[in-house]
Image (cartoon, rainbow over all chains, first blue to last red; front, side, top):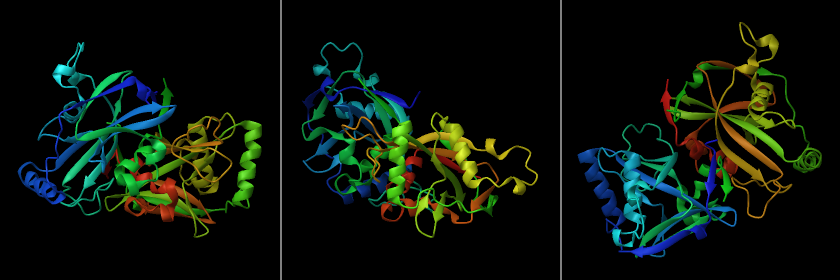
Length: 203
Length: 203
C-alpha cells in the first residue's frame, strides 16, 4: 500500500515569516562558476529537493517557493560533501521553512526531525557546467556535474512553516503545473507525472 | 534497492513476426462510442500497458509498437471486467508479443508466466468520452471513464518477441522521447520522467 498517500487540507497549515534568505550567487554565471569551482574540489554536486503535497478541495497542490515574484522553486538545496541525502534534505527543509527557535511555541521536538521523507520521485542530471539538466544521464556523459534528487515529503496533519521574507510559499495545483513548462520549466511541470502513480486519500 | 534495475542489451532480444492484429475499432469515433457502450454495461474501463526497457550502448530504450508507420503505442490494452490487473497485463503482453505456439522452440514454460511486472509508474485518467487524458483526476470529476496504468516490465536477459505483421516493434531511446510530445504525445514523452528515479545497471 505504499502507493496510497494521505493528503491534508492546505487550511491545516500555518504560515509565518522569517528573515530574508538572499540567493548565494548574484547571477547565473556566478552560480555556474561556483559549481565548477566546487566540482574541482569535491566532485559532482548533489542536490535534494522536497515535493510537499497538500490538497485544496480534493485536488493535490504542491508547496513551492516563489522568489521576487518571478521564478518558482522547490524547497531544498545542495548537500555538503559526504552528507547523507535524507539528513541533508531535512536540514535544507529546516533552513528554508522551519520556524526560528523563538517562534516554536509549544513544540516538544526539535523541528529538525519532523520531516517525513518518502520515495525518491525523480533524478535530474547536469551534464556540463551549463543551465540545462535532463531526467537521464545523456549518452557519452561519464562525469555529470550535478545530480538533483526530488523526494516526496509526506506532510503531517498540521504544521507551521516559516517563509523567508524575500520569498512567497504558494500552493500550486497539479492541473496548473501539467503541460506548463513555459511557465514552470521542465522540472516543475513534470511533477504531475511523478505523482500520478499514487492514490491520494483526501483527509 | 528496488530503485536499481538491470537492463540487457537490445541485441539479446530476438524478434519474429506473427499474424496481423487489426485495430478493434475502425475510427476514433467508433472507439469512443464502444468505450461509452462498455461503460454503461461494466463501468470505468481499466487499461494496462507495459514499459519494456532495454539498453543500447548504455542508454535506456523503450520497446514500442508502431502501427502503419504512423502512431506509437505501448504493448497492453484494456482489461476484462473483474480481471486482475497483473494477470491481465501478462495476458495482453502475450497476445501482442508472445510467439505463437508453433514458434516456441525449446521453451520449457508456457509463455504466459514469463513476464516480470514491476512497479506501477503512472496512471492516466479519461474524464469524459473524449480523446484527452490527464495524469490526475481533474477537479470535479467523480466518475472517470477510463483509468490507464503503466507498469515497468523487467525484461529478462534474453527473450523472443513475436510482432504482429501490421506493426513494427521499435526501441526508442529516452533522449528521443524526452520533451517530444509533438511526435510521441503526452503519455509516451513523459516516460523519461517516470523512469528517472531508477538507477540502471547496464549488463
